[in-house]
Every structure is written in structure tokens, then in C-alpha cells.
View 1 (cartoon, rainbow, N blue to C red):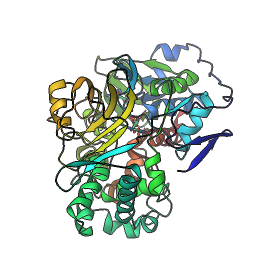
View 2: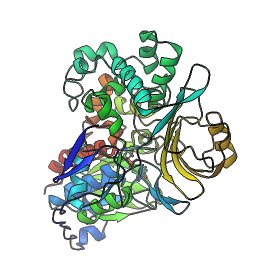
View 3: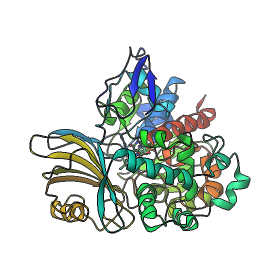
Length: 469
Ligand SMILES: Cc1cc2nc3c(=O)[nH]c(=O)nc-3n(C[C@H](O)[C@H](O)[C@H](O)COP(=O)(O)OP(=O)(O)OC[C@H]3O[C@@H](n4cnc5c(N)ncnc54)[C@H](O)[C@@H]3O)c2cc1C
């Protein structure tokens, strides 16, 4: 296992518990702008729509340029597809949670805020498919064999993604590969039944099923992990101890931008001189420019004037965020111990990760891409888990269906075939005075908080030229 050093502290991937950080950088809260006459008339330099990581990152960057910024957020909380809450008395995350030193923006933010990190407990065995059922395997056996399969699955990644933060560097080669789904690649490998089960367990669910996700998206993530199975497995290890909401709040506090919660935006109109934003409750705001920091899947729910470009319309109708993504927390009476569970395509629960042993039970977190499964129904979840662990007894569940969430309409981003070569460049560009920020359209870690921060910084840069008076 590889070691990483943060501010001089050695961290071992998948260590038991690691509190980090060295002295936090001085935390400068930007002075809130005075309540000018313009602001009391709802006039700003920039309006940011959406207070997920992309939105708060953009807002802080704009405030650092001395601009007056308003954030309009539909929900009654910030954080978007990250959401820190509680389950059975424990702090849990219903969305994005794990961070890694390879993800430089989010990692620097953690150091900057002086946030402690926790490493989730290392699994000590796996429950993986066998030819007929499921069986226990040692970590070495399971991840060693699956790592070899993944390496074979991704063997063209160095050639296709030589510079992972510039994913179109070899667009000439990618044009032929980008139309392929994960299923296409699996079929081309002519795997044994068992190898295919082990590979779909690691790839298919991430993209909303092997038939939905683009093969190039998986290759891109693999490239970001240095084309290395150990680093790929390691990215889901560390989480901020105080929660993702706290990390987002730290950015927001520093930005000291105006924030209106419970303010879903209905329309955004750019007349070439200024942009008017109207909320669903009818309040109108104007600004020199706007950063739209909502998920790609949500673009279609907002009226844009002029209309969105054809590429953006295609992106939002095809979806970027996985529309079937669900996350669930379980308290299980049957103690599996620290067992990591993977199921092949077609199972209602595709991954179970051990999080904490309690006195008489254990906490696990799982993922599902099956919209027929009600992840808040104990009996249904128990039936789903029993397909893998026949004597499982589920005592309590708490789940989040990101696909039916009106302000997400999907989970993490996983591009579909053709979207990298056909759409990404075009949808990263501004449209008049409107720029777009979301992890879904990041050049690097799209599908991660890191990508949200990358895109927020880009959008802030794009709109600045309109906002400087
Ligand atoms: C289950 C799950 C697990 C994940 N695991 C990880 C992980 O371990 N590590 C990791 O790095 N990433 C993970 N991700 C991905 C990560 O959470 C996202 O990529 C990232 O949070 C997206 O940030 P964003 O700002 O682009 O979008 P969002 O977080 O979706 O923010 C968009 C904001 O816009 C608001 N909004 C939407 N519509 C409107 C409107 N009309 N008006 C006003 N506001 C609106 C939303 O309410 C939201 O607050 C996971 C995601 C999910 C769903």
C-alpha cells in the first residue's frame, strides 16, 4: 500500500484512523460588502445559482476579486450532492464524501481550513461473486485478481489519456473509442463468466449499468489514478471528520457572499447588457453575469433566454449525472465483520462497505442503481441484501434517491458514450454572460467534489470580464 504525506504527517492508505492536519493556513473571511443601494434593489455583480461545491468555490473566487456576489440556492441547505446528516446517532454522508491527495483543489482546501480527516476502517475480507453464488475471499485474492482485470480492461488508458487533466489531448484516437459503452468493452474482452462478474462489480454500477456509461469515462478516472489499481482503490478512503457540509460551509463563510436559501431559480435571461434571474416565487435579481452551478441534468428545468445551445440541450436530455444513483446506510444485525461486498450487474444493491462495528450490530454504507428499490424501506433493503447474505437482518435504513431529487436529477456524473468528444469542450464555454460550473463538466475529476471546485474556478474566471466595472 502506498504512503502519502500531508504537511509532514505520514498517512497510510486504508489506515485505521488518521486525524490530520498540520497548522491550518490563516483563514481570511472576506469583508461583506456594504449594503449599497444597488444591492438593496437586488442588483449584483455576479449571481451564482446553486450552493454546491462548484457554486461556493465560484462565489469565493469572485468575492476575492472584490465583486458583489449573490448565491441563490433551491434547497434549505448548502452542499448539493454532498449532504451531511445523521443515522442511528452517527454522522453520515448521503452523497459525496471521500477525498484523496491526488485531488489537489479539495485537498488544499482541507489543509487550508485545517479540517481533520478520518480513514474508514480497512476491510479485512471481501464477499465477491463465485460462478454460482457469492463467497468470501481475502483482500489480496479479491483485489489482486480484480486489479489485474481492471488493468486489462483499461490497458489503453495511457495512450488515450496521456494527460488526464486535459482529457481531449488525444481526441484523434478517442473519437473511435468514445462511442463505446462499458458493456462493449466487456464483450470485446471475451471474459469468463466469473471474470465478467468481478469486472462489472467494479465498473458497471458506477456508470448506472454497463449499458449506460461510456468506457472512456472509466478510462479517464483510471488515468487520473496514475493507471494504477492500488491508487484507484485508495481514492475512497479518507473523509473530512467534521463532514462535507462543514467543508462547504468553510468556503462559504470565507466568501461572505449573500446567500438566499429556499430560492429555486425558474428563469435566467441575458439581454446582452445584464442578466435577470427570476426565482419560482417571483423575486427578480439582476447582475452583470451569472454562474449557473446546478447539475447538467437540472439545466432542462430552467428557462434560459436566449435558449441553451444545442450541445447543452443534448447534454441535459442525455444526462451526465447517473439518473439511477442511490446511496443507503444500513444497520445490520448479522455482523459481516469488516467485509467489503461487490455484486455483478443486475443486483439491487451493488456495493456494501463496512463503516463501524456497534455493540450489537454494524453500520454499512451501500449503493444501488435500481430505482425499483426503495432505499428507505427496511423490508425491501433486507430482501435485497439477502440475495448476497442470506441470513442478513436489517434493523434500520436511511437512503437518498438522487435520481428523483428535483435539484439533482442524478447522482455523481458518469459520462455517456460520445459526450467526451462530442460535448465537453462546448459545454465548458460560457454562453453570453452566463457561465456554467459543475463537477459534471470538469476536465479532470468529473464526478467528484474535486471536479466541482475545478469548474467553479473556471466559471468565476470566465464571468469576471463582465463583472469588473
Ligand atoms: C451518492 C453519491 C456519492 C458520491 N461520492 C463521492 C465521493 O466519495 N467523493 C467525491 O469527491 N465525490 C462524490 N460524489 C460526487 C460529488 O458529490 C459531486 O460531484 C459534487 O458534490 C457535485 O457538486 P456540484 O457543485 O457540481 O453540484 P451539486 O452538489 O449538485 O450542487 C448544485 C446545487 O444547485 C442547486 N440547485 C439545483 N437546481 C437549482 C435551481 N433551480 N435554483 C437554485 N439552485 C438549484 C442544488 O440544490 C445544489 O445545491 C458522490 C455523489 C453522490 C450523489
